[in-house]
Every structure is written in C-alpha cells, then in structure tokens.
Length: 152
Image (cartoon, rainbow, N blue to C red):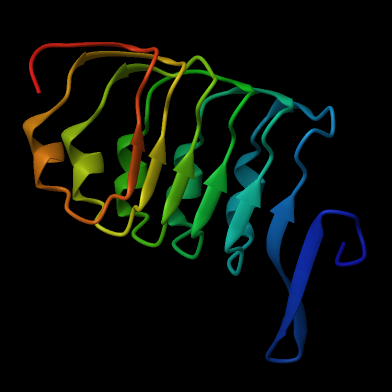
C-alpha cells in the first residue's frame, strides 16, 4: 500500500507503516471502516470532498497518534462521539460541511491539543457549553451555519 497514490509510509523498526492517508476529492463513498483503527502509526487522515457517509466510528478512539483529521465536505452524520475525547493528539479536527448533529459535548472541550476545530455547515444545536470558554490554545474555531443558540 505504501506505493499507492495518497498513502505515505515511514519505516519504523524495519517495517513500512502507513503514516498518512490523503485521498481528497477521489469519489470515495461508503462509511469510515472500523478496520482503519488498526493503523497504529497514522498521523494524518484527509478524505475531504468525497461522498463518505455514516458516523465517526467509536473504534477510532484508540488511534491516539492522529494529529490531523479532515472529513470536510462529505455526508458524515450522527453526533461527535464521546469516545473520541480520549484522542489527545489531534491538533486539527475538520468535519465541516457534513450532517453532524446533536450538541457540542462538554468532554470535547477537555481536548487540550486541538488548535483548529472546524464544524461549520452542520446541524449542531443547543448552546455552546461553558467548558469551551476555558480553551486557551485554540487558534481557529469554526461553528458558522449551525443551529447554536444562547449567549456567549
């Protein structure tokens, strides 16, 4: 797989390991498979601008190496999984232009490494949880075109 377009590998302890998947705008469809959670060295995952549907799999919560996650402009639905709050290495979380709903969970505000959080153009509702007010390291925070109400 290391020779496939959009797949990058690094030799770790004598084995080629997938470290990034960049398959933007490739007409991919279907859901994000649980089996990708077995990629234990992946740092960057970008499948923006495809037709990927379904929810963000709970099984991916075990992938603590991912730093850059981008599923923007797909058909991802469901809510932000609570299980993903254990993923402490994500710095860039981009899932805008999907059908993600529900409310922003308080637990996601505890993820201190996130520098860019992009969820614009989804169906997020409710009010912005107080826990998000303590986030001092976020450089970019996008929630435009959702159904968030209340007072900042």
